[in-house]
Image (cartoon, rainbow, N blue to C red):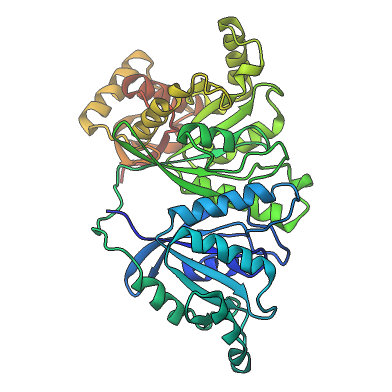
Length: 436
């Protein structure tokens, strides 16, 4: 039923993210020539010899006392617990270090199958220098080069041999994918952890802790979800490092992979111009949207204050008038139970289809209530309408002349369609076409 899970583990800067990207066939993990760039676990699907498996990239296990290192080590250890097979990656240009030996001790305690990969072996002469890695006690070391893709076949052959047997079934089409986007430090990772009831994603007061987009499965009340946590998006002028630029691009890609997007707003700092820009990304992508006001426990959270904040949101986010608003606190889990039902409703509406005959009844009733207008002596004639797509729901109205459909009347028809069919949480598209 589930796919085997493989975790790539090792000390910092041995090339884990390079190998990860090479195996999944695209640039998912951030790669930069400095240690500690990958902080959270990163998941993706990979395939070898028709066998599908989930691959986890981890932050490097380090024994130092710098900020976040303990958290990074915890994340790597969680990945080890989740994995069926572990690829222990080392740097073939540096030999065995004390940090490698420390990682080896952690892996021995896990009692999981471990396959040894010696990275950065870029030429045949270097292959003769890997025999010292037998001393780690994990069997044959495989010389590989992540940069050039050398030796990965032999490594993966050994990895696949250790896979447990699972019933192979396609991923449930009913799984709802939702992402969390927002400015840095609005509580996205805290909300993920609150939903999962575990410390799955690194949470820190240091702004920009989450850099990679992280996929996590969640099953609740008979519904399967995939949560995509993303790095906080900063203003373009503040995106200095290449690392941060990759994070923004990855957040945008996460939106594209989502059915529903949660736009997080910090109740303490209030609405910022950047919040509207970030929300616009989700709206422009045609995704279902829910506005989540986090840290509601830190402000005057009575009904009057909630109503005032909601009116403020509606004023600033007029283009998201279809999006429900959820007030909660990820830290205290106050009102956290209200979120998943809203996500499910928005996802259902995002994929909703309406019968053509019922749609046309709604359109004709709207015309009877508010007849079409004339423009330059010509009156708009609406012949019929049909739904042509979902995610988001999209409709084509066939008319005598598309130029006669004024924006205001198009908006009127959109509102009538919403009144009739709901579509709470999702944008809808309405196109005019001339009947041939």
